Image 1 (cartoon, rainbow, N blue to C red):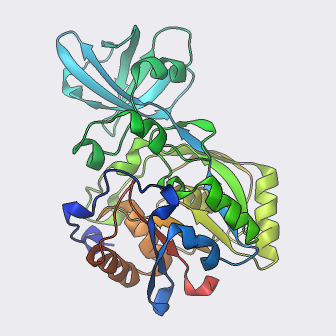
Image 2 (cartoon, rainbow, N blue to C red):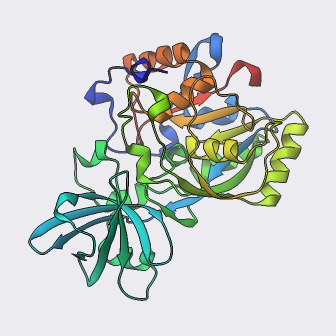
Amino acid sequence: MRVDLFDFELPPENIALRPAVPRDAARMLVVGGDEGFADRTVGDLPDQLRAGDILVFNDTRVIPAQLQGRRGDAKIGATLHKRIDLRRWQAFVRNGKRLRAGDRIDFPNDVSAVAEARLADGSWTLAFAGGEPVEVLLQRAGTMPLPPYIASRRATDERDVEDYQTMFAAQDGAVAAPTAALHFTPALVSALHEAGVGSETLTLHVGAGTFLPVKAEDTADHAMHAEWGRIDAAAAERLNDARRSGLRVIAVGTTSLRLLESAADEDGTIRPFEGDTSIFITPGYSFRAIDGLMTNFHLPRSTLFMLVSALMGREVMQAAYGHAIAEGYRFYSYGDASLLLPRKAN
């Protein structure tokens, strides 16, 4: 499909630079296929779901993966986006033209890495010196990797250390937050439990590739970056039992959705999963593992806007985003939410 079919105009004032306080006070647009749109708040979520629905959360934890260093006199910026092994990560590098294979980059607090090789997508493999896990080094030298549409408008600060982490964060490895879950608070989770809504968790370590623009003119020519994920056998079986009983599985965030769909057979059976996924969902895709999605509002021409268009229909989502922009909804990572319930799931 043509990528320009997924374009829209977003006024800069609709881009959120800070999250709502409290988090569940964010607005939520409920989209139900041909049934129109309903303006709600995230705190209304228990009333929008059914007893027995299962929400699936991503328990990845964002690491301080943004690094500023030097190779000699040259300033080098690096954003780690995918672990290779204990000492080596793939990274997007700013001022990468100043690097050659074998160069050492010096970061603050005695952290350094060798630029081993430049990959086909333009990123680099960085091999960190020393014996400590890279995550430990990042605590000394790194900062939280805010999305570029926020970082270009303000500096990262101490508030972001907490704001850009979900209450479910447990497994270190993400370089971007699973932002739909940023809206959840202990009070909201308690209210959902009282309403009979269940939950499961999986892990998908979100990479910085999620923010890369689609430069191709046709979706068939776009290559997704791989991300590592895991669904354990017990969680997969509980989700399968729920769907066999006619209950709905609703992904919280596109990260949860993509991993569930990666783990599902053609008949919709969710299998245990551990490994990389580079699934790219566009209109025409037949969803197998989920019955709905809670997600934030995404960038124009992005793979994530293509995903929600596949779930609900491109025309429906163009109209929904038009409504959201006109009504002043806040977009992107710190912005408001949408609850997408395709008609087949209602």
